[in-house]
Image (cartoon, rainbow, N blue to C red):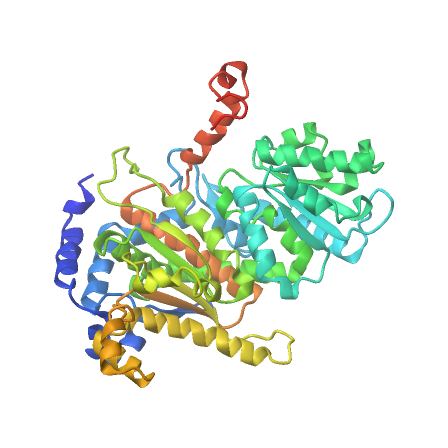
Length: 536
């Protein structure tokens, strides 16, 4: 494989970036009356505005040329064909099959997996409906009121994020999530629950994950201390795993065990049986609408031309910012409060996937790969780290996420929503255009300062702008639109991995820490630990 940075498409982009170095976003808008329309696209109920990215039509053409050089359409075809593109583990990355319609044919190694996928989906939605209706009883013949999901990483972040985002349509048993092995977390949750009406969902692909197994042991001890022990714990325990033989040996009944497959990566698994707490909270109909949203984005990604393809556009904008504008970080700023956990969810998906320095051919990457992803709620950030975005020494590209329509049952809901979206649009505009010293001088004098006084403060209160951003608009925050949004980011990550020539679906860096933790439990490993009370 030739060096990516020496390829024709890459060198053309590098030269183009140098030519654009002194061109401000203000200049790009001033020279193109149709820019807002030309730099936008929509699909699956989402609208993408990337007009505030620091790129031109020529930039876009060159980026798409890079995607074509890296055989993007071929990689998309391989992904959807179920080929083992996770080459270090010799597995497909086939999470799209989990949300595909029943009549689809999707094969791994020549085997159509759709009958198995829908068999599990039917089982879990039937179970969820039984729990929601009160037909499922605990050991003391009482209906379940609370569900505690015990997992970590992809077994926690995805389901927890979606449960928060869709809380307005959640009308089933209350859902709680335990991921931290620090006993304070599980104790804080269990202290307010009734053992006789609580169900535990224990999620581990291998059913050996140390943190999850430790928390699960405490959950079972809590049931035991309440007089629910032995076989009586059965209606309070559910296992979700790719190793059902291990969960069975640990005492989780086969009839309460839901499986998934090795071609489902943890951070891409919320579409599988791991979505059980969501199906319990929002109901099987809404859960299937969530799956349909993801499937709609899959269909778009698979068939849309590259210049109209939302995941490709979002990904190539990121490549431009990371590799040619030399921005090492990426802010994800959500404005709907219910998307409070979306940034941490995407952070795991992106950084665990593309935090790699070795290409698929085993050679070191000769360019930067995945950026540092960070962020949270935009309204909160405006009163904190947005100061650095506006006037700091770093240029930080931003991806904003907003919702056009809101139906919160509050007398002044329309005003709340207006202010939220006003702030989103204002921040994107302010970051892009800034305010030069002449405009700042006029503004300060309009506030009542003399010309002499204004001159003293003009440099501190000027803003360079020129910060690139994209905005993703959902028409409304529904199960369908959220499913499409998540799938958009999944495919963005895959697209960037294909450009950089890395494997997005293994995570040996995560595995290393787990391995060392196990080694330190042995007497030999413990000998290397600092003394009690020392600094680790």
